[in-house]
Length: 164
Image (cartoon, rainbow, N blue to C red; front, side, top):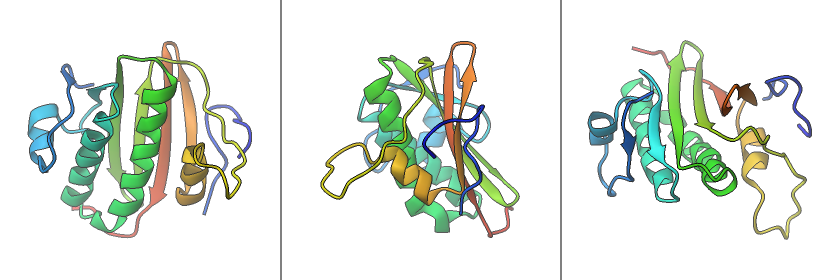
């Protein structure tokens, strides 16, 4: 999807505290320490290490929702959205939400920049710039919602498991 149309790409096959990155192995304790991104936005510090925390939070929500079969794709795509927010926005923090609902799971990363991400063509020899290419090809839908102060970049996956 080369350009954004409105706030969404076409169809395809607030927690109060700011959290520092969690140590490896924190597991579901991430939900207890930082909050549940399925209940509301969790705010994380804008550091590369926070991608691991965002992945653990997202995976905890998936496991708890009976959607563990989507862990690999969600883990990769969360890393890409968080990486973009950390590298390209200059923000001190970013927000994460993971919303499982009947038939879909949606992951949102909010940052204070209104600069839109660009889906660039990818060549086999490229060593970077593949993030949105992966999001575009592995998610069913993705897009960007512009906010009065910043934006939310999101993706959705169709899911077949039943939510509890």
